[in-house]
Image (cartoon, rainbow, N blue to C red; front, top):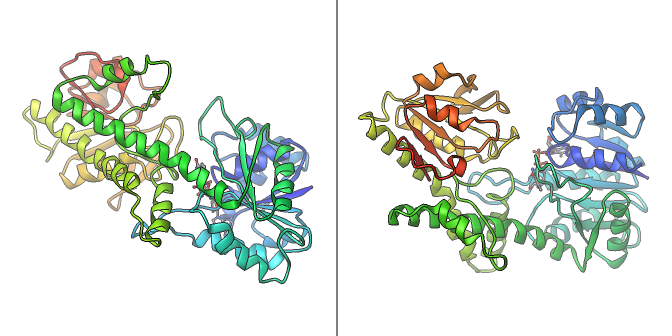
Length: 420
Ligand SMILES: NC(=O)c1ccc[n+]([C@@H]2O[C@H](COP(=O)([O-])OP(=O)(O)OC[C@H]3O[C@@H](n4cnc5c(N)ncnc54)[C@H](O)[C@@H]3O)[C@@H](O)[C@H]2O)c1
């Protein structure tokens, strides 16, 4: 079978590779010519896809990349993995999905399967994709087959990858579900068919809302514990000894990435149209979005301890990406923390091996090598991302004061460390 993947980012490139590995003839399509050229040379730009694997699949002819949609004419199936961000007003920006569906429409032919993987609100497949594709005159479930199958990839996860993470599939018709299930079952260990595209769309949003709400809860517990002068880390460790009915979530500087902070807002938006207020989503979002400010308040406390003010202090931020071992800064709370520090006239320095440079407040910053000299020059060190390669004992030895947003210190009672 020939299968095309539209959108070759964190989701699309690993997906194309997994399918090529299973013996499909894969074509990756992207509007970003740089990605296409790089991938065709066998050079991976996604950490979870090794260049050696990409190169082998390109050389053996199982995988090729193009920005020319004309190849869609020859594809038996098309999988759409384009972004679904929020617009400026934090409403869903569905424009990438719409434009991808429109190009698929222009090449839709008898027998073709179309699968949407981008995370979105329930109803996107039947309200947006279906009318567009059906306007060709081809009939869904008979002439072409349409399904939604949410992506569950967890970038940087060494245990779970695309092939060993169960995949949910919901088709527009029973035949659509059957065919899509058969397609994925050839590359993925376990496929879970559900009764409709809406169930598949909603299940993904439930997974991400579950995380957002629980992180919001544990962040509030962290604030409560600080007020009560109790170590939240000790409380969590104690609660987590319960072998049933409790799941360990950790507090931190806020939510990041393209999924957890964004996807629940898609559901909220959809429900607003039905005059329903999604309260858990709103409340957890409010708490999670307030965490960068909470961290900055802690930085103020740490500086105050040293009789210093924000204005003129050098603050070193460790970790810019939203989680360890990846270079993705989308929605990263580190960016909000840096922005707030700049507004308070701090001199900002950061280190993140995976993020060589970044823009905050129209200024470009470059990751600085983490040396003892750098630590000496900083009035305060803020550990935002728990990157496993940070040698915390060494940092503690050299830094003047530390604000630690994670449990890296193991609850050590060190005066110069403020844990959150
Ligand atoms: N990143 C994750 O961990 C993750 C996990 C699960 C689900 N998702 C969902 O998967 C979807 C994709 O996320 P991502 O992180 O891979 O995004 P991404 O930004 O890394 O990649 C998207 C790619 O699509 C390309 N693109 C945009 N419009 C296009 C078009 N019309 N034609 C061809 N290419 C186009 C972009 O150039 C980009 O390379 C989103 O809906 C996201 O919510 C992401």
